[in-house]
Length: 382
Image (tube, rainbow, N blue to C red; front, side, top):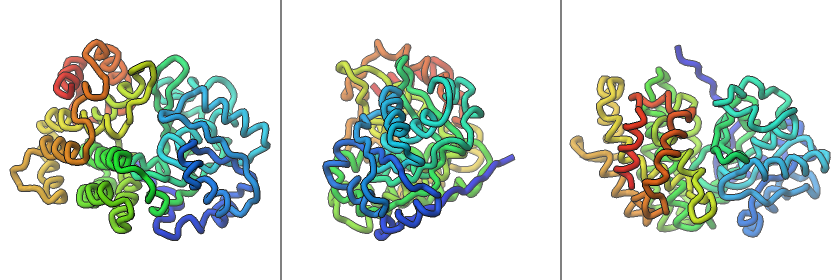
């Protein structure tokens, strides 16, 4: 049986930010805490949001790291309580939006953040008391603005998921003009994240035809426009297409993801050069070819002609090697194509495999992966 829930209030277009004030009123938020990062704040985008909210001066937490951490969640939650806030506005990429979801839990629920992690059985403990969140993405990749989950690195080093419909933003303000200043490398990396979401959720075996249709359309848009958006950050059509594809990937992945994310989550939690800084979208792009080769023989994939259907929307020849096409796109975008280029080596594989097997995306891959399978995928991607 399919459970289908679509979804939240979404404003998509070049005038979307103007809706923020009315959305705050609709949600009932009068004094939100603005969650962002220093780059987005320096670019003036958080300021634009504060001005559009029309609520006067608002407290701003701008210390979101490149991968959201429990330590920063707790710091922001303390600010939320100190400033007597009644909601959250996240302005930024997936990290800021995910951090805000962590704050939505930590500022309103007792106990430790770990208790609410999905693999710890915590999803059911997240209640309607979670702080209401309005999400304003400034990148086109994670789709966190329309997703019920967040990925956070805990103090014990694990990179875990938190999932609840109570974390779903009450409103998503998707204004492509906020992505105009995004550097080309980050445009490419976040765009490949959107492509990975569309592909993985389309391949997930659950029966959910609406999700399949949304994912395929998102893949078509992203594949056709990612190079244009990367080469010309002011290309309005390309920026709009990428923001839509990002949103669509996350609208669809309530159906489930798979081995790409089972691997990228623990890879993103690795300490490389003394810090956890491996970009999630880039990791997805690097491991995607190996996972595509692994999944090609999955019974549901074969029965539903899913690779052929992806080739059609990607405008590829009927006999094209999908894994090679993804590898070649990653290379054309100037992103790393090997894990070794990102500082990963085989000594890290045991930790990654252990994390992959425990990850919440492991069970929704179209073909069950063993520890040896994950190790082969890592070796193939190294």
